[in-house]
Image (cartoon, rainbow, N blue to C red):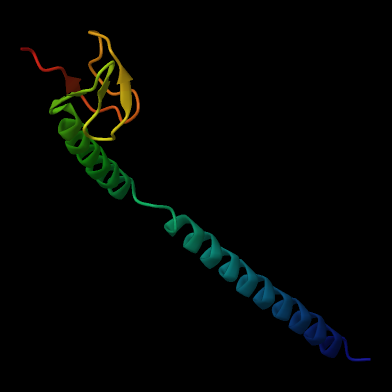
Length: 106
């Protein structure tokens, strides 16, 4: 019996298994690299958050420009949301829309 033939067969099987393991390892490596690159960049997160905060700041500035309350018989009406407010001197913001309101002083 020729032992070299059996050895070549075993060597061929080992070589085939090594190639399949290498291909599987490469495939798993590319999948892991793709998933890590899918995470957002820190700089883009900061830029998006900064833009959002600037827009919110502009919106809040617009709300801080006071509007005069419309006087009704026993209450006031907010001109922004038409909500009736109780007659009191301590109202500074509309409880419904949050806009800054002031009373007319005569």
